[in-house]
Image (tube, rainbow, N blue to C red; front, side):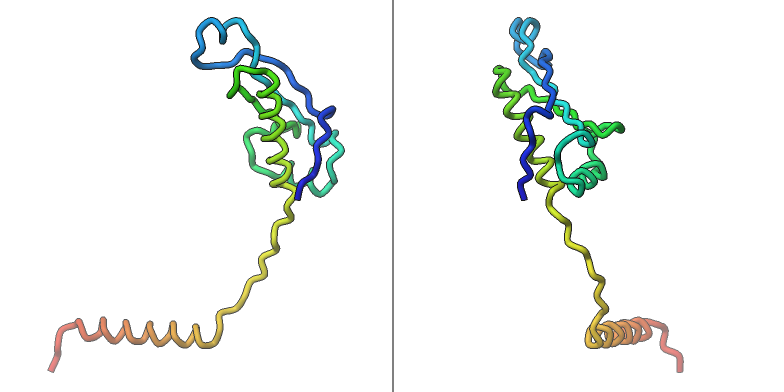
Length: 132
């Protein structure tokens, strides 16, 4: 299920990227920090609740998703990458998890288990010393 994210609710800030790249890394701010406040967003309440319940290191205690995109040397491509990753995170929270209904073991499976226990007990009993 896809829940659209309003791009106006995402705050982008350009930062310098890490890693190799020589002078380009030292002087050009092409990496992007994307900040998305879950509580202040226009997402449905159910999606907000599931997003805040996620145990994800990218979500702060205040309920803000912080993504860092620095794969590309282009600021626009990094913004698109951050939006794509944020959309994937929201989509994963938008899927309603299936409720697990516990089932009871069938009578046949219980009988087979007990028969196997009896058989293995008999095998172990035959391993003992023979007393006459």
